Image (tube, rainbow, N blue to C red):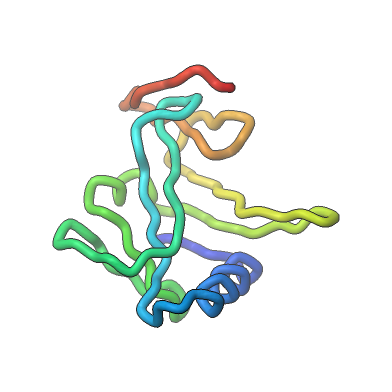
Length: 118
């Protein structure tokens, strides 16, 4: 299960409304790499494959590739505004460590491919 806060949901829906393609959805994923070994992928997409898992999160279509789903169970996505800027934050209860940027994490039983931070 993936949880999306009200503020994140509002921001994602706003982004979807700005797209010219009507069948866009939120795609989440995990890639090897990043400061801690794994990094999150999050964006709008309109292409699906047979390797995708489809979810409905409070009326929002969310798609995750089958390889990433095991890393994202219980994931919480929020959107925080700070002054004139803002951004999405991710809390992953499966991660044992995260880097300072919040975009990379480490799992207990998998090392991933840690990279040097810039």
